[in-house]
Image (cartoon, rainbow, N blue to C red; front, side, top):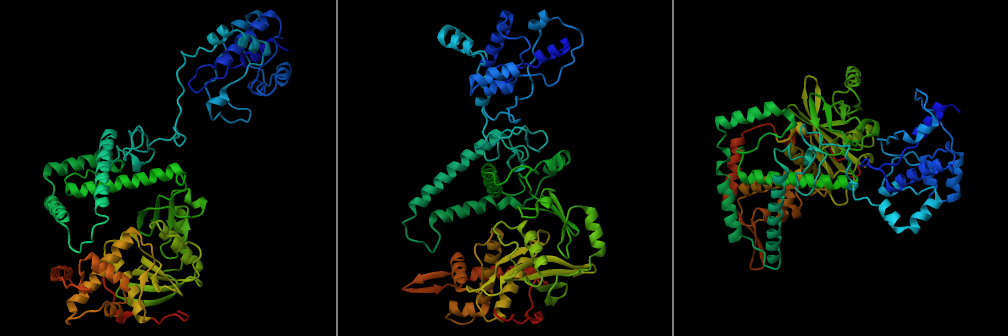
Length: 582
């Protein structure tokens, strides 16, 4: 063997190092014993101690001895100048800067995998017999302690917010964050401020629990208590100045913040609304961030996971709200391109442009059952147009949390609302219903596309579902559970229907059953809405419906101010007969 190769062999004898860059005590003892043995001539100088042989020595002494005598050099190291054998002991043996590998080729996952037993049995026995030598050899007080990290933390990840060090959390309950949803800097806060706000929220929650516990066995009040009345007055007082507008200095400050940070920071929210509403918004942000952190710890979502962040849909680029089970090769892209007519999803802008050049669809498949002005509604059978309905469900899941139906679309009918222009019929929203519902559900899933929200289209979809129930001569109700936005929309719709009925009602006695038959609203929904409006009272063994003129006048004034618009369903424009078998 050449001398340069022999020197290369000695340079390959690395000492195991921990994550903090210090030598293990056992490994250093092994190197000292090996060097002393080589000087005595007990062990051949060409013996190479590989890390694999050291690992195997834990299970068998004989195997370790065999590994020492049979280990060979895999690749000589070109050292350059000739070095005589007498200089071997003076060579500097550099530690490997990268984490040591286990015999399987993976980095060690815990501290226990870095402990290496000495291959020299006689040396181990001498250490065991001499306590002083053993104690001096294992004096590790000079070594820094190894950091033990939470198993859910991956320190290769960092917060995407520019200038953020990933410390702190919006909830004030975690030491680190890896997403914008938990970043204090993105929300224009510090980690200490988040902790203070978390302490305040916990204190308020404890007070609310105590109050709830004290009122649990109390009688149910049909009218607000004195405490609720005072609280309502306080909220009204705090909200008085929320529409006063911003001063010139505040506007300049906000514009400067927007120009300097762009979309990497949340806009300044102070003085835009009342302190009460701003605090409610901050609580909702913290709660949503806590839910996301819990899901991340449970492994249900991870940063950089297969979640579509945005979709290009027609003229709009939409930010998604929830995960949708698109195929993995599409979901991992983070950005999806969807044809707004046939709902086919694609990977790139080029593919979408080529598809739009030859796509012949300009409206949903199925029968057009309603048209008034630019608004049309198409009835799509999930059995006849299975691919379109599946794509519609996948698209809807990006904006709905509780939706579970994706592929089993055959038992459902889909009613798709569109708005027409010279380019085609653009998707506004839809609702689905079972062909045969034993509980008379008239809606299974309902969605208004984000670009058409807060424009009255949601109420139009709800009103259209009840119009179909009237034609079927049934009483309908939406399938539970309702999403948060769905519950708000239905509550608003039921309130408007009842107040309109009260406004037009001229008799002295009113019946819940009559209201249900005329409006097609389920009696349970009517009673819950009357209770929320404090229009239902129990008196002398009977339930009385109170005609609150203040609520009716308030609704009428809003109706007059709204004026006549086309955001209403005209029953005369419906051309539909109930499908057979329903």
